[in-house]
Length: 281
Image 1: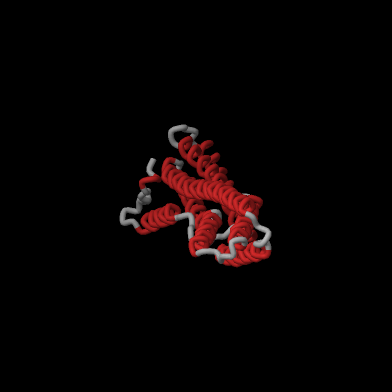
Image 2 (image 1 turned 90 degrees about the horizontal axis):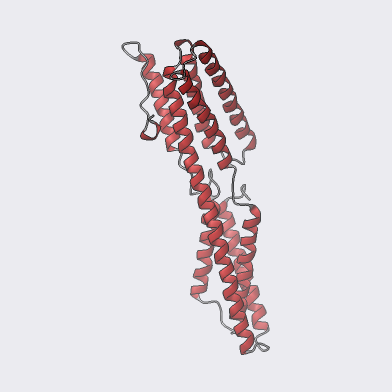
C-alpha cells in the first residue's frame, strides 16, 4: 500500500464506509419487524464492543506509527552528527590523506541529502544511491587504514576511525528505520474492523428506522482522519507529515562553505566549517 497516495486511501475509506453503513442500515430496516427490545439491546452492546475494538486498534497503530516516525527523526539527526564529527576529526589525520578524506566526506553528505528526498518506492534510484554511499564508505575506510599505518596515534587517527565507525553505523540504523513500517496485515485488520463497525452502526439505525445522525457522521470522519494520520506518519518520504532533514541540509551547507573558504582564504590556510550545536564534539 506504500505506493498508493494516502489521500486516495482516505477517499476510499470514506466511500467504502458509506456503503458499509448503508448496507447495514438497509439490512436493519428489512429486519425491523422481527426486532425485539432484547435484540436491539444486543445490537447496541455489539456496536459498543466493535467501537471499543476499533478504538484499541487505532491507538495501537497510531502508537506504532509515532514510534517509527520519532525513530527516523532521531536517526537523521544522529547520522548528521556522526558525519559532522568525522569531518571535523579529519583535521587530525596526516596531511597526505586529509584533503582526500574531506573531499569524500563532502561527496558522502551530498549522497545522503539526495537519498533523504527519495521515496523508498523508487527502488532502482535508491539502490544506486545506497551503493554509491557504501562505495564512499569503503574508500574512507581505506584512507583511515592508510592514515593509521602512517601515524598510529590513538589520540589523532584513532579518534577519526572511531568517528568514521559511528558514521557507518548510523548509516545502517537510518536505512533500517526508513524501511520499517506498520505491517500491512495490521492496516488491513484496521480497515476490516472499520467496515464491520460501520455496518453494525448502520444496522442499529436501521432497526429503529432512523437515518444515521450527524454525530455518527462526525465520528466516521474523525476515524478516517485518524487513519489518514497513521498512514501519513508511516510514510517518511511522502505525504503531508515528513521527517525533517534540516540537520543534514545544514551540515551540507557547512561542509561546502568550509571547502569554499579553504579554496579562497586569504592566508591559504583551510578554514574549518562551523558545526551546529548537535554536531560539536
